[in-house]
Image 1: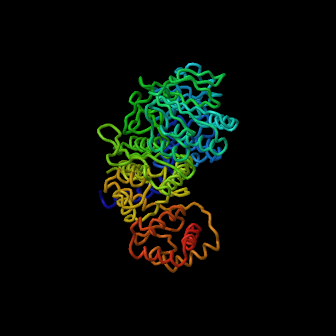
Image 2: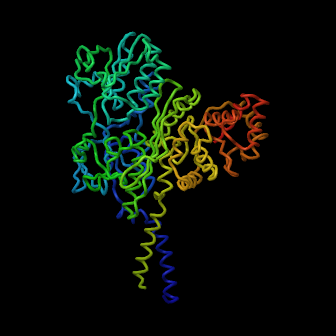
Image 3: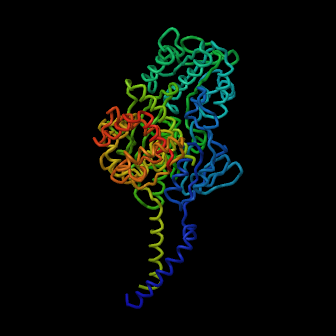
Length: 429
Length: 196
Protein backbone atom coordinates (compact mmCIF):
# COMPACT_ATOMS: atom_id res chain seq x y z
CA UNK A 1 0.00 0.00 0.00
CA UNK A 2 1.46 3.44 -0.97
CA UNK A 3 1.46 6.31 1.49
CA UNK A 4 -1.35 7.96 -0.43
CA UNK A 5 -3.53 4.91 -0.69
CA UNK A 6 -2.99 4.23 3.01
CA UNK A 7 -4.23 7.73 3.74
CA UNK A 8 -7.24 7.12 1.48
CA UNK A 9 -7.82 3.82 3.24
CA UNK A 10 -7.82 5.53 6.64
CA UNK A 11 -10.15 8.26 5.44
CA UNK A 12 -12.50 5.70 3.99
CA UNK A 13 -12.32 3.64 7.16
CA UNK A 14 -13.32 6.60 9.25
CA UNK A 15 -16.07 7.61 6.86
CA UNK A 16 -17.48 4.11 6.72
CA UNK A 17 -17.09 3.64 10.44
CA UNK A 18 -19.09 6.75 11.27
CA UNK A 19 -21.76 6.19 8.63
CA UNK A 20 -22.09 2.53 9.47
CA UNK A 21 -22.80 3.44 13.06
CA UNK A 22 -25.79 5.37 11.78
CA UNK A 23 -26.78 2.63 9.40
CA UNK A 24 -26.04 -0.27 11.68
CA UNK A 25 -29.70 -1.33 11.95
CA UNK A 26 -29.90 -1.39 8.15
CA UNK A 27 -26.90 -3.71 7.91
CA UNK A 28 -28.51 -6.09 10.32
CA UNK A 29 -31.97 -5.94 8.83
CA UNK A 30 -30.64 -7.95 5.91
CA UNK A 31 -28.77 -10.47 8.04
CA UNK A 32 -30.98 -10.66 11.11
CA UNK A 33 -32.22 -14.13 12.02
CA UNK A 34 -35.75 -14.90 13.14
CA UNK A 35 -36.57 -17.26 15.99
CA UNK A 36 -40.22 -18.19 16.46
CA UNK A 37 -41.06 -19.50 19.92
CA UNK A 38 -44.22 -21.50 20.37
CA UNK A 39 -45.57 -21.50 23.92
CA UNK A 40 -45.24 -18.73 26.50
CA UNK A 41 -44.72 -20.89 29.57
CA UNK A 42 -41.56 -21.14 31.63
CA UNK A 43 -39.35 -22.56 28.86
CA UNK A 44 -40.63 -20.42 25.99
CA UNK A 45 -40.68 -17.13 27.87
CA UNK A 46 -37.20 -17.64 29.35
CA UNK A 47 -35.81 -18.49 25.92
CA UNK A 48 -37.43 -15.38 24.40
CA UNK A 49 -35.90 -13.05 26.99
CA UNK A 50 -32.44 -14.63 27.01
CA UNK A 51 -32.15 -14.79 23.21
CA UNK A 52 -32.68 -11.03 23.16
CA UNK A 53 -30.26 -10.48 26.05
CA UNK A 54 -27.60 -12.62 24.41
CA UNK A 55 -27.92 -11.22 20.88
CA UNK A 56 -30.16 -8.24 20.23
CA UNK A 57 -29.68 -8.75 16.46
CA UNK A 58 -31.97 -11.76 16.61
CA UNK A 59 -35.64 -11.14 15.93
CA UNK A 60 -37.77 -13.09 18.40
CA UNK A 61 -41.51 -13.77 18.07
CA UNK A 62 -43.36 -15.54 20.88
CA UNK A 63 -46.72 -17.12 20.13
CA UNK A 64 -49.02 -17.77 23.07
CA UNK A 65 -52.84 -17.82 23.08
CA UNK A 66 -53.27 -16.68 26.69
CA UNK A 67 -52.82 -13.08 27.86
CA UNK A 68 -51.48 -14.23 31.23
CA UNK A 69 -49.40 -17.14 32.37
CA UNK A 70 -50.40 -18.73 35.69
CA UNK A 71 -47.55 -20.54 37.41
CA UNK A 72 -48.13 -24.06 38.62
CA UNK A 73 -45.31 -23.64 41.13
CA UNK A 74 -46.53 -22.05 44.39
CA UNK A 75 -50.15 -22.74 43.36
CA UNK A 76 -50.21 -25.30 46.20
CA UNK A 77 -49.57 -22.47 48.62
CA UNK A 78 -52.69 -20.81 47.23
CA UNK A 79 -54.62 -24.04 47.92
CA UNK A 80 -53.22 -23.94 51.47
CA UNK A 81 -54.71 -20.47 51.93
CA UNK A 82 -51.39 -18.68 52.32
CA UNK A 83 -51.08 -17.01 48.90
CA UNK A 84 -53.18 -14.67 46.79
CA UNK A 85 -54.08 -16.15 43.38
CA UNK A 86 -53.15 -12.89 41.63
CA UNK A 87 -49.50 -13.38 42.62
CA UNK A 88 -49.41 -16.46 40.37
CA UNK A 89 -50.37 -14.50 37.23
CA UNK A 90 -47.85 -12.93 34.87
CA UNK A 91 -48.40 -10.79 31.78
CA UNK A 92 -46.13 -10.66 28.75
CA UNK A 93 -45.41 -6.91 28.78
CA UNK A 94 -42.03 -7.50 30.44
CA UNK A 95 -40.87 -9.57 27.47
CA UNK A 96 -42.00 -6.85 25.06
CA UNK A 97 -39.60 -4.48 26.81
CA UNK A 98 -36.78 -6.80 25.74
CA UNK A 99 -37.93 -6.46 22.14
CA UNK A 100 -39.81 -9.75 21.93
CA UNK A 101 -42.81 -9.60 19.57
CA UNK A 102 -45.78 -11.27 21.22
CA UNK A 103 -48.61 -12.72 19.15
CA UNK A 104 -51.60 -13.95 21.15
CA UNK A 105 -52.79 -16.66 18.83
CA UNK A 106 -52.88 -20.41 18.49
CA UNK A 107 -50.42 -22.33 16.32
CA UNK A 108 -52.21 -24.63 13.88
CA UNK A 109 -49.20 -26.33 12.37
CA UNK A 110 -45.47 -26.12 11.80
CA UNK A 111 -44.08 -26.90 8.34
CA UNK A 112 -40.65 -28.28 9.20
CA UNK A 113 -39.52 -28.32 5.55
CA UNK A 114 -40.52 -24.79 4.56
CA UNK A 115 -39.73 -23.60 8.10
CA UNK A 116 -43.02 -21.83 8.64
CA UNK A 117 -45.43 -21.62 11.56
CA UNK A 118 -49.11 -21.30 10.68
CA UNK A 119 -51.45 -19.50 13.08
CA UNK A 120 -55.21 -19.83 13.49
CA UNK A 121 -55.58 -16.32 12.02
CA UNK A 122 -54.13 -17.88 8.83
CA UNK A 123 -51.02 -15.79 9.26
CA UNK A 124 -47.80 -17.60 8.46
CA UNK A 125 -44.39 -16.88 9.99
CA UNK A 126 -41.00 -17.90 8.57
CA UNK A 127 -38.31 -18.95 10.98
CA UNK A 128 -34.60 -19.65 10.87
CA UNK A 129 -34.99 -21.65 14.04
CA UNK A 130 -38.09 -22.49 16.02
CA UNK A 131 -38.33 -23.27 19.74
CA UNK A 132 -41.30 -25.38 20.81
CA UNK A 133 -42.14 -25.36 24.50
CA UNK A 134 -45.58 -26.99 24.58
CA UNK A 135 -45.63 -28.22 28.18
CA UNK A 136 -47.65 -31.27 29.10
CA UNK A 137 -50.87 -32.82 27.91
CA UNK A 138 -52.90 -35.50 29.71
CA UNK A 139 -53.65 -39.09 28.78
CA UNK A 140 -57.42 -39.03 29.18
CA UNK A 141 -58.18 -42.61 28.26
CA UNK A 142 -56.58 -44.48 31.16
CA UNK A 143 -59.11 -44.13 33.98
CA UNK A 144 -62.60 -45.42 33.26
CA UNK A 145 -65.26 -42.78 33.81
CA UNK A 146 -62.77 -39.92 33.72
CA UNK A 147 -62.12 -37.62 30.75
CA UNK A 148 -61.39 -34.04 29.76
CA UNK A 149 -64.99 -32.89 30.31
CA UNK A 150 -65.28 -34.51 33.72
CA UNK A 151 -61.94 -32.91 34.65
CA UNK A 152 -63.76 -29.58 34.67
CA UNK A 153 -65.58 -30.67 37.84
CA UNK A 154 -63.01 -33.19 39.11
CA UNK A 155 -60.01 -30.88 38.65
CA UNK A 156 -56.43 -31.98 38.10
CA UNK A 157 -55.13 -28.46 38.89
CA UNK A 158 -51.92 -29.50 37.18
CA UNK A 159 -52.06 -26.72 34.61
CA UNK A 160 -52.66 -23.70 36.78
CA UNK A 161 -55.54 -21.27 36.22
CA UNK A 162 -59.25 -22.08 36.30
CA UNK A 163 -58.42 -25.64 37.37
CA UNK A 164 -56.63 -24.36 40.48
CA UNK A 165 -59.53 -22.04 41.33
CA UNK A 166 -62.03 -24.90 40.96
CA UNK A 167 -60.11 -27.14 43.34
CA UNK A 168 -59.76 -24.32 45.88
CA UNK A 169 -63.49 -23.60 45.71
CA UNK A 170 -64.34 -27.26 46.29
CA UNK A 171 -62.03 -27.37 49.33
CA UNK A 172 -63.67 -24.24 50.69
CA UNK A 173 -67.20 -25.56 50.31
CA UNK A 174 -66.35 -28.99 51.72
CA UNK A 175 -67.82 -29.96 55.12
CA UNK A 176 -65.64 -30.33 58.19
CA UNK A 177 -64.97 -34.07 58.37
CA UNK A 178 -64.87 -34.50 54.61
CA UNK A 179 -62.45 -36.64 52.61
CA UNK A 180 -60.09 -35.34 49.95
CA UNK A 181 -58.57 -37.85 47.53
CA UNK A 182 -55.38 -36.93 45.67
CA UNK A 183 -54.34 -39.38 42.97
CA UNK A 184 -50.83 -38.79 41.53
CA UNK A 185 -49.73 -40.62 38.38
CA UNK A 186 -46.87 -43.02 37.70
CA UNK A 187 -43.52 -41.57 36.53
CA UNK A 188 -42.58 -39.61 34.50
CA UNK A 189 -44.71 -36.53 35.17
CA UNK A 190 -44.38 -32.79 35.72
CA UNK A 191 -42.86 -31.64 39.00
CA UNK A 192 -42.48 -34.94 40.92
CA UNK A 193 -42.77 -33.55 44.50
CA UNK A 194 -45.83 -31.38 43.70
CA UNK A 195 -48.65 -33.84 44.58
CA UNK A 196 -47.09 -34.35 48.02
CA UNK A 197 -46.56 -30.66 48.59
CA UNK A 198 -50.21 -30.29 47.59
CA UNK A 199 -51.25 -32.87 50.21
CA UNK A 200 -49.21 -30.90 52.77
CA UNK A 201 -50.74 -27.57 51.83
CA UNK A 202 -54.31 -28.92 51.74
CA UNK A 203 -53.64 -30.52 55.14
CA UNK A 204 -52.52 -27.12 56.43
CA UNK A 205 -55.75 -25.57 55.15
CA UNK A 206 -57.90 -28.33 56.65
CA UNK A 207 -56.04 -28.27 59.98
CA UNK A 208 -56.82 -24.56 60.23
CA UNK A 209 -60.42 -24.60 58.96
CA UNK A 210 -61.81 -28.16 58.92
CA UNK A 211 -59.74 -30.21 61.36
CA UNK A 212 -61.92 -33.35 61.28
CA UNK A 213 -61.18 -33.82 57.57
CA UNK A 214 -58.84 -36.30 55.95
CA UNK A 215 -56.65 -36.62 52.85
CA UNK A 216 -56.07 -39.96 51.13
CA UNK A 217 -53.30 -40.17 48.55
CA UNK A 218 -53.95 -43.00 46.09
CA UNK A 219 -50.61 -43.43 44.40
CA UNK A 220 -49.62 -45.22 41.23
CA UNK A 221 -46.07 -45.52 42.57
CA UNK A 222 -44.13 -47.43 45.19
CA UNK A 223 -42.14 -44.40 46.30
CA UNK A 224 -42.09 -40.68 45.62
CA UNK A 225 -39.82 -37.63 45.54
CA UNK A 226 -38.48 -36.40 48.92
CA UNK A 227 -40.57 -39.17 50.52
CA UNK A 228 -38.76 -39.46 53.87
CA UNK A 229 -38.73 -35.69 54.33
CA UNK A 230 -42.42 -35.41 53.46
CA UNK A 231 -43.41 -38.24 55.77
CA UNK A 232 -41.37 -36.79 58.65
CA UNK A 233 -42.96 -33.39 57.98
CA UNK A 234 -46.46 -34.88 57.90
CA UNK A 235 -45.71 -36.63 61.19
CA UNK A 236 -44.61 -33.35 62.70
CA UNK A 237 -47.50 -31.22 61.47
CA UNK A 238 -50.38 -33.50 60.56
CA UNK A 239 -50.19 -36.58 62.83
CA UNK A 240 -48.97 -38.87 60.06
CA UNK A 241 -48.70 -42.48 61.13
CA UNK A 242 -51.17 -42.09 64.01
CA UNK A 243 -54.88 -42.96 64.15
CA UNK A 244 -55.63 -39.26 63.86
CA UNK A 245 -53.43 -38.65 60.82
CA UNK A 246 -54.83 -36.08 58.41
CA UNK A 247 -52.90 -37.76 55.56
CA UNK A 248 -52.94 -41.42 54.48
CA UNK A 249 -50.72 -42.59 51.65
CA UNK A 250 -51.63 -45.75 49.75
CA UNK A 251 -48.77 -47.03 47.57
CA UNK A 252 -49.41 -48.95 44.37
CA UNK A 253 -48.56 -52.28 46.04
CA UNK A 254 -51.13 -51.48 48.74
CA UNK A 255 -53.78 -50.95 46.08
CA UNK A 256 -53.30 -47.25 45.27
CA UNK A 257 -53.77 -47.74 41.53
CA UNK A 258 -57.07 -46.21 40.34
CA UNK A 259 -59.29 -48.26 38.08
CA UNK A 260 -62.36 -46.13 37.63
CA UNK A 261 -64.23 -43.05 38.72
CA UNK A 262 -67.92 -42.56 39.40
CA UNK A 263 -67.97 -38.80 39.05
CA UNK A 264 -71.68 -38.45 39.91
CA UNK A 265 -71.32 -40.19 43.27
CA UNK A 266 -67.78 -38.94 43.81
CA UNK A 267 -66.57 -42.47 44.28
CA UNK A 268 -63.18 -43.61 43.15
CA UNK A 269 -62.37 -47.29 42.69
CA UNK A 270 -58.81 -48.11 43.58
CA UNK A 271 -57.34 -51.60 43.49
CA UNK A 272 -57.57 -51.79 47.31
CA UNK A 273 -61.15 -50.58 47.73
CA UNK A 274 -63.68 -47.92 46.77
CA UNK A 275 -63.33 -44.49 48.30
CA UNK A 276 -66.20 -42.07 48.61
CA UNK A 277 -64.76 -38.58 48.65
CA UNK A 278 -65.96 -35.00 48.99
CA UNK A 279 -63.19 -33.60 46.81
CA UNK A 280 -61.29 -35.61 44.22
CA UNK A 281 -58.05 -34.42 42.65
CA UNK A 282 -56.94 -36.86 39.96
CA UNK A 283 -53.58 -35.92 38.45
CA UNK A 284 -53.73 -37.91 35.20
CA UNK A 285 -50.74 -39.55 33.50
CA UNK A 286 -48.99 -37.21 31.11
CA UNK A 287 -47.36 -36.86 27.71
CA UNK A 288 -45.86 -34.03 25.66
CA UNK A 289 -48.13 -31.12 24.68
CA UNK A 290 -50.44 -31.45 21.64
CA UNK A 291 -48.32 -29.43 19.22
CA UNK A 292 -45.34 -31.73 19.82
CA UNK A 293 -47.44 -34.63 18.51
CA UNK A 294 -48.90 -32.65 15.62
CA UNK A 295 -45.41 -31.59 14.51
CA UNK A 296 -43.95 -35.08 14.78
CA UNK A 297 -41.56 -34.15 17.55
CA UNK A 298 -42.45 -37.09 19.83
CA UNK A 299 -41.18 -40.67 19.84
CA UNK A 300 -42.92 -43.85 21.06
CA UNK A 301 -42.62 -42.74 24.68
CA UNK A 302 -44.92 -39.77 24.04
CA UNK A 303 -42.13 -37.28 24.83
CA UNK A 304 -39.67 -35.36 22.63
CA UNK A 305 -36.13 -36.63 22.01
CA UNK A 306 -33.59 -33.79 21.81
CA UNK A 307 -29.86 -33.26 21.41
CA UNK A 308 -28.72 -32.58 24.96
CA UNK A 309 -26.23 -29.93 23.92
CA UNK A 310 -28.53 -27.71 21.86
CA UNK A 311 -32.05 -28.99 22.66
CA UNK A 312 -32.57 -29.33 18.91
CA UNK A 313 -35.07 -32.06 18.10
CA UNK A 314 -33.39 -35.24 16.91
CA UNK A 315 -36.41 -35.76 14.62
CA UNK A 316 -36.60 -32.35 12.88
CA UNK A 317 -33.82 -29.93 12.03
CA UNK A 318 -33.94 -26.29 13.16
CA UNK A 319 -36.64 -27.02 15.75
CA UNK A 320 -35.64 -27.01 19.39
CA UNK A 321 -37.81 -28.42 22.16
CA UNK A 322 -37.47 -27.35 25.80
CA UNK A 323 -39.32 -27.81 29.08
CA UNK A 324 -41.50 -30.60 30.44
CA UNK A 325 -42.15 -32.21 27.03
CA UNK A 326 -38.50 -33.13 26.38
CA UNK A 327 -36.61 -36.31 27.16
CA UNK A 328 -33.82 -34.67 29.12
CA UNK A 329 -33.42 -37.14 31.98
CA UNK A 330 -31.61 -36.95 34.43
CA UNK A 331 -33.14 -33.45 34.45
CA UNK A 332 -36.60 -33.58 36.02
CA UNK A 333 -39.70 -32.06 34.46
CA UNK A 334 -39.68 -28.90 36.55
CA UNK A 335 -39.94 -25.13 36.21
CA UNK A 336 -36.33 -24.61 37.24
CA UNK A 337 -35.16 -27.22 34.72
CA UNK A 338 -37.21 -25.54 31.95
CA UNK A 339 -35.66 -22.17 32.85
CA UNK A 340 -32.17 -23.72 32.76
CA UNK A 341 -32.82 -25.60 29.51
CA UNK A 342 -34.12 -22.43 27.84
CA UNK A 343 -30.85 -20.61 28.56
CA UNK A 344 -28.71 -23.48 27.26
CA UNK A 345 -30.90 -23.62 24.14
CA UNK A 346 -30.76 -19.83 23.60
CA UNK A 347 -26.96 -19.80 23.95
CA UNK A 348 -26.69 -22.70 21.48
CA UNK A 349 -28.88 -20.90 18.92
CA UNK A 350 -26.81 -17.71 19.21
CA UNK A 351 -23.62 -19.74 18.72
CA UNK A 352 -25.06 -21.63 15.73
CA UNK A 353 -26.22 -18.41 14.04
CA UNK A 354 -22.75 -16.94 14.45
CA UNK A 355 -20.87 -20.08 13.38
CA UNK A 356 -19.27 -20.44 16.77
CA UNK A 357 -18.74 -23.62 18.76
CA UNK A 358 -21.69 -24.52 20.95
CA UNK A 359 -20.82 -24.04 24.62
CA UNK A 360 -20.59 -26.85 27.13
CA UNK A 361 -24.03 -26.95 28.82
CA UNK A 362 -24.33 -26.31 32.55
CA UNK A 363 -27.68 -26.55 34.34
CA UNK A 364 -29.20 -26.48 37.81
CA UNK A 365 -32.44 -27.70 39.29
CA UNK A 366 -33.56 -26.60 42.74
CA UNK A 367 -37.03 -27.46 43.86
CA UNK A 368 -38.61 -26.36 47.15
CA UNK A 369 -41.67 -27.87 48.78
CA UNK A 370 -43.58 -26.09 51.54
CA UNK A 371 -44.84 -28.60 54.10
CA UNK A 372 -46.28 -25.91 56.38
CA UNK A 373 -45.75 -22.15 56.69
CA UNK A 374 -42.13 -21.64 57.81
CA UNK A 375 -41.24 -25.25 57.04
CA UNK A 376 -39.78 -26.09 53.63
CA UNK A 377 -37.58 -28.82 52.18
CA UNK A 378 -35.63 -28.90 48.94
CA UNK A 379 -33.85 -31.02 46.40
CA UNK A 380 -31.01 -29.61 44.30
CA UNK A 381 -28.67 -30.84 41.59
CA UNK A 382 -26.03 -29.43 39.25
CA UNK A 383 -25.90 -30.90 35.75
CA UNK A 384 -23.16 -30.98 33.15
CA UNK A 385 -22.69 -32.67 29.80
CA UNK A 386 -20.60 -35.68 28.88
CA UNK A 387 -20.49 -37.95 25.84
CA UNK A 388 -23.65 -36.63 24.27
CA UNK A 389 -25.74 -36.64 27.42
CA UNK A 390 -26.73 -34.36 30.26
CA UNK A 391 -25.29 -35.82 33.45
CA UNK A 392 -25.55 -35.20 37.18
CA UNK A 393 -22.31 -33.84 38.60
CA UNK A 394 -20.98 -36.44 41.02
CA UNK A 395 -20.86 -35.33 44.65
CA UNK A 396 -23.23 -32.39 44.06
CA UNK A 397 -26.86 -31.90 44.98
CA UNK A 398 -29.18 -33.86 47.18
CA UNK A 399 -31.93 -33.29 49.70
CA UNK A 400 -32.43 -31.19 52.82
CA UNK A 401 -30.77 -33.23 55.59
CA UNK A 402 -33.29 -35.22 57.66
CA UNK A 403 -31.90 -33.65 60.84
CA UNK A 404 -31.96 -30.02 59.63
CA UNK A 405 -32.79 -27.67 62.53
CA UNK A 406 -36.13 -25.86 62.62
CA UNK A 407 -34.49 -22.50 61.99
CA UNK A 408 -32.81 -23.88 58.87
CA UNK A 409 -36.17 -25.20 57.60
CA UNK A 410 -37.58 -21.72 58.19
CA UNK A 411 -34.75 -20.31 56.10
CA UNK A 412 -35.63 -22.76 53.35
CA UNK A 413 -39.20 -21.42 53.41
CA UNK A 414 -37.89 -17.86 53.04
CA UNK A 415 -35.62 -18.98 50.23
CA UNK A 416 -38.53 -20.82 48.59
CA UNK A 417 -40.46 -17.55 48.42
CA UNK A 418 -37.35 -15.77 47.13
CA UNK A 419 -36.97 -18.51 44.53
CA UNK A 420 -40.53 -17.82 43.33
CA UNK A 421 -39.92 -14.06 43.08
CA UNK A 422 -36.56 -14.35 41.35
CA UNK A 423 -37.66 -17.16 39.06
CA UNK A 424 -40.75 -15.32 37.79
CA UNK A 425 -38.81 -12.04 37.50
CA UNK A 426 -36.08 -13.83 35.54
CA UNK A 427 -38.70 -15.17 33.13
CA UNK A 428 -41.27 -12.41 32.70
CA UNK A 429 -39.56 -9.09 33.58
CA UNK B 1 -5.44 -3.29 -2.50
CA UNK B 2 -8.27 -1.73 -4.45
CA UNK B 3 -10.69 0.72 -2.89
CA UNK B 4 -13.49 -1.82 -3.30
CA UNK B 5 -11.49 -4.45 -1.48
CA UNK B 6 -10.71 -1.98 1.27
CA UNK B 7 -14.39 -1.26 1.63
CA UNK B 8 -15.22 -4.95 1.71
CA UNK B 9 -12.62 -5.46 4.42
CA UNK B 10 -13.94 -2.54 6.48
CA UNK B 11 -17.47 -3.85 6.14
CA UNK B 12 -16.40 -7.28 7.26
CA UNK B 13 -14.61 -5.82 10.31
CA UNK B 14 -17.61 -3.76 11.25
CA UNK B 15 -19.94 -6.70 11.00
CA UNK B 16 -17.79 -8.87 13.24
CA UNK B 17 -17.18 -5.94 15.58
CA UNK B 18 -20.91 -5.42 15.91
CA UNK B 19 -21.46 -9.02 16.86
CA UNK B 20 -18.74 -8.73 19.47
CA UNK B 21 -20.66 -5.84 21.02
CA UNK B 22 -23.56 -8.08 22.02
CA UNK B 23 -23.15 -9.79 25.41
CA UNK B 24 -22.35 -12.94 23.51
CA UNK B 25 -22.74 -16.16 25.47
CA UNK B 26 -19.55 -17.54 26.93
CA UNK B 27 -18.69 -20.25 29.43
CA UNK B 28 -18.91 -17.79 32.34
CA UNK B 29 -22.45 -16.68 31.47
CA UNK B 30 -23.41 -20.31 30.78
CA UNK B 31 -22.51 -21.12 34.40
CA UNK B 32 -23.82 -17.89 35.94
CA UNK B 33 -27.21 -17.83 34.18
CA UNK B 34 -28.31 -20.91 36.09
CA UNK B 35 -28.01 -19.00 39.39
CA UNK B 36 -30.67 -16.46 38.33
CA UNK B 37 -33.72 -18.47 39.38
CA UNK B 38 -32.69 -18.01 43.03
CA UNK B 39 -30.34 -14.99 42.99
CA UNK B 40 -32.10 -12.94 40.28
CA UNK B 41 -31.16 -12.10 36.69
CA UNK B 42 -27.42 -11.32 36.64
CA UNK B 43 -27.36 -11.75 40.42
CA UNK B 44 -29.68 -8.95 41.60
CA UNK B 45 -32.19 -10.60 43.90
CA UNK B 46 -35.85 -9.65 44.13
CA UNK B 47 -35.92 -11.00 47.68
CA UNK B 48 -37.30 -11.37 50.24
CA UNK B 49 -34.35 -13.40 51.51
CA UNK B 50 -31.92 -14.73 48.89
CA UNK B 51 -28.90 -12.41 48.75
CA UNK B 52 -27.88 -10.44 45.70
CA UNK B 53 -24.54 -11.57 44.35
CA UNK B 54 -24.19 -8.93 41.63
CA UNK B 55 -21.18 -6.70 42.27
CA UNK B 56 -19.74 -9.16 44.78
CA UNK B 57 -15.97 -9.08 45.24
CA UNK B 58 -14.23 -11.62 43.02
CA UNK B 59 -12.25 -13.16 45.89
CA UNK B 60 -15.14 -13.06 48.36
CA UNK B 61 -17.21 -15.07 45.86
CA UNK B 62 -14.47 -17.69 45.56
CA UNK B 63 -14.06 -17.85 49.35
CA UNK B 64 -17.81 -18.26 49.85
CA UNK B 65 -18.17 -20.99 47.23
CA UNK B 66 -15.13 -22.82 48.57
CA UNK B 67 -16.48 -22.65 52.13
CA UNK B 68 -19.86 -24.01 50.95
CA UNK B 69 -18.13 -26.73 48.99
CA UNK B 70 -16.19 -27.84 52.05
CA UNK B 71 -19.20 -27.56 54.40
CA UNK B 72 -17.37 -24.82 56.28
CA UNK B 73 -20.28 -22.41 56.24
CA UNK B 74 -23.90 -22.90 57.37
CA UNK B 75 -26.10 -23.43 54.33
CA UNK B 76 -29.47 -24.64 53.14
CA UNK B 77 -28.87 -25.51 49.47
CA UNK B 78 -25.61 -23.73 48.63
CA UNK B 79 -23.37 -26.44 50.07
CA UNK B 80 -25.13 -28.97 47.84
CA UNK B 81 -24.84 -26.71 44.78
CA UNK B 82 -21.24 -25.52 45.27
CA UNK B 83 -20.06 -29.14 45.19
CA UNK B 84 -21.10 -29.24 41.52
CA UNK B 85 -18.34 -26.89 40.35
CA UNK B 86 -14.58 -27.07 39.80
CA UNK B 87 -12.22 -24.32 40.98
CA UNK B 88 -11.94 -23.01 37.42
CA UNK B 89 -15.71 -22.86 37.03
CA UNK B 90 -16.01 -20.98 40.32
CA UNK B 91 -13.43 -18.47 39.07
CA UNK B 92 -15.45 -17.92 35.89
CA UNK B 93 -18.60 -17.28 37.91
CA UNK B 94 -16.64 -14.94 40.21
CA UNK B 95 -15.55 -12.89 37.22
CA UNK B 96 -19.11 -12.79 35.90
CA UNK B 97 -20.81 -11.66 39.11
CA UNK B 98 -18.07 -9.24 40.21
CA UNK B 99 -18.62 -7.41 36.93
CA UNK B 100 -22.37 -6.97 37.43
CA UNK B 101 -24.00 -4.00 39.10
CA UNK B 102 -26.34 -4.73 42.01
CA UNK B 103 -29.83 -3.26 41.58
CA UNK B 104 -31.35 -3.32 45.06
CA UNK B 105 -35.11 -3.63 45.40
CA UNK B 106 -36.88 -1.56 48.04
CA UNK B 107 -37.25 -3.05 51.51
CA UNK B 108 -39.16 -1.96 54.62
CA UNK B 109 -37.40 0.17 57.22
CA UNK B 110 -38.10 2.56 60.08
CA UNK B 111 -36.41 6.00 59.99
CA UNK B 112 -35.54 6.13 63.71
CA UNK B 113 -34.00 2.66 63.49
CA UNK B 114 -32.08 3.72 60.37
CA UNK B 115 -30.54 6.70 62.17
CA UNK B 116 -29.38 4.58 65.10
CA UNK B 117 -28.16 1.91 62.69
CA UNK B 118 -26.10 4.43 60.74
CA UNK B 119 -24.34 5.52 63.94
CA UNK B 120 -23.55 1.89 64.79
CA UNK B 121 -22.29 1.26 61.27
CA UNK B 122 -20.07 4.37 61.29
CA UNK B 123 -18.57 3.40 64.64
CA UNK B 124 -18.08 -0.33 64.16
CA UNK B 125 -18.33 -1.36 60.50
CA UNK B 126 -17.37 1.50 58.20
CA UNK B 127 -13.65 0.84 58.42
CA UNK B 128 -13.97 -2.39 56.39
CA UNK B 129 -17.47 -2.06 54.86
CA UNK B 130 -16.62 1.36 53.45
CA UNK B 131 -18.96 4.02 52.08
CA UNK B 132 -21.92 2.81 54.09
CA UNK B 133 -21.33 -0.79 53.04
CA UNK B 134 -21.92 0.04 49.39
CA UNK B 135 -18.61 -1.23 48.01
CA UNK B 136 -16.88 -4.58 47.85
CA UNK B 137 -13.36 -3.14 48.10
CA UNK B 138 -10.97 -5.11 50.30
CA UNK B 139 -13.14 -8.13 49.51
CA UNK B 140 -15.80 -7.23 52.05
CA UNK B 141 -19.43 -8.10 51.45
CA UNK B 142 -21.82 -5.43 50.11
CA UNK B 143 -24.23 -4.65 52.97
CA UNK B 144 -26.09 -1.67 51.54
CA UNK B 145 -29.31 -2.83 49.88
CA UNK B 146 -28.56 -6.45 50.71
CA UNK B 147 -31.61 -8.53 51.69
CA UNK B 148 -32.49 -8.11 55.39
CA UNK B 149 -33.35 -11.74 56.24
CA UNK B 150 -30.08 -12.89 54.68
CA UNK B 151 -28.05 -10.37 56.71
CA UNK B 152 -29.95 -11.38 59.87
CA UNK B 153 -29.16 -15.08 59.24
CA UNK B 154 -25.52 -14.23 58.60
CA UNK B 155 -25.09 -12.17 61.76
CA UNK B 156 -26.85 -14.87 63.81
CA UNK B 157 -24.50 -17.51 62.42
CA UNK B 158 -21.44 -15.37 63.14
CA UNK B 159 -22.54 -14.56 66.72
CA UNK B 160 -23.28 -18.25 67.34
CA UNK B 161 -19.82 -19.03 65.96
CA UNK B 162 -21.41 -21.27 63.33
CA UNK B 163 -19.74 -19.24 60.62
CA UNK B 164 -16.06 -18.41 60.73
CA UNK B 165 -15.09 -14.80 59.98
CA UNK B 166 -12.01 -12.77 60.86
CA UNK B 167 -11.36 -12.41 64.59
CA UNK B 168 -11.70 -8.64 64.17
CA UNK B 169 -15.14 -8.86 62.63
CA UNK B 170 -16.36 -11.37 65.18
CA UNK B 171 -15.21 -9.15 68.06
CA UNK B 172 -16.85 -6.06 66.59
CA UNK B 173 -20.15 -7.80 66.03
CA UNK B 174 -20.04 -9.30 69.50
CA UNK B 175 -19.35 -5.84 70.94
CA UNK B 176 -22.37 -4.39 69.16
CA UNK B 177 -24.48 -7.28 70.39
CA UNK B 178 -23.23 -7.02 73.98
CA UNK B 179 -23.73 -3.25 74.09
CA UNK B 180 -27.04 -2.93 72.28
CA UNK B 181 -28.53 -6.41 72.16
CA UNK B 182 -30.65 -7.69 69.26
CA UNK B 183 -32.09 -4.18 68.96
CA UNK B 184 -28.72 -2.84 67.81
CA UNK B 185 -28.45 -5.60 65.22
CA UNK B 186 -31.95 -4.76 63.96
CA UNK B 187 -30.99 -1.06 63.76
CA UNK B 188 -28.05 -1.98 61.56
CA UNK B 189 -30.34 -4.08 59.36
CA UNK B 190 -32.78 -1.18 58.99
CA UNK B 191 -29.91 1.08 57.95
CA UNK B 192 -28.74 -1.33 55.23
CA UNK B 193 -32.33 -1.92 54.10
CA UNK B 194 -32.87 1.84 53.73
CA UNK B 195 -30.05 2.22 51.23
CA UNK B 196 -30.30 1.87 47.49
